[in-house]
Amino acid sequence: MYIGRFLVVGKTKEGKVFGAYRVSSRSFPNREARKLNENTIAILPKDLNEMFKNPYITYNCIKVVNKTVVVSNGIHTDFIAEKLHFGKRDALTYVLAVMDYEKDEYNTPRIGAVLDKEECYLGYVSCEDIRVKKVNLKNGKGYYLGVYNACSIDESQEIEIEGETAEEIADYILNYKEFEYPVACAVAIIEDEDISLAIKNKN
Image (tube, rainbow, N blue to C red; front, side, top):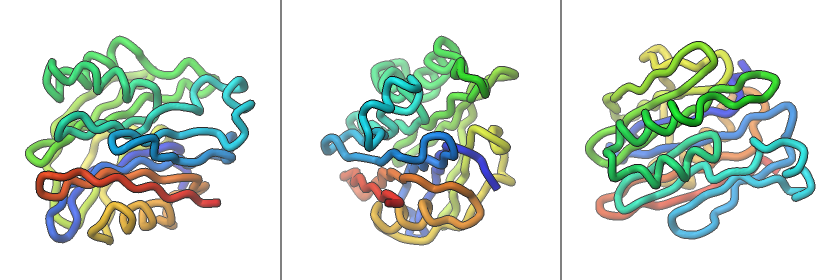
């Protein structure tokens, strides 16, 4: 099944909270996840000239602010992170409403998540609707939210999670067979008082 870019929020079997983002792409597969610093992971084209072909292929996909993780499929990651003083739900809602869906040929939805050890919010804005919802995370499970054929916040969109480290989860989600055209995966996992980041690229 092709669901395009998607994110996963959940808990490991041992109860560690994580947020993950995977690029799945038919149009621009020549990209990679790159850790910019201890708080930020970006999606970048391997050939930087491709940045000029499409404004939506280069962005920060994970940003950590204090003990809060922001995950999204576009430049709205940074804006959500900047608005966290509003609160997790309100920052996500405000930015999705203001920025709206991507104005490309597919009207691609913007998706996002804001989470910490205590709570998690998922949200999206499409050309048809907008929704932000608090979700309850369960050990060993992950909720996924994709831009195509999976743009809803529904308990049916749940997968089993394997791995206890950011690296193991990144590898697991990148190679998750049900979702086609994997390119790159980024993960932030909350462990006690620390947040660890990891990336995994297909090539």
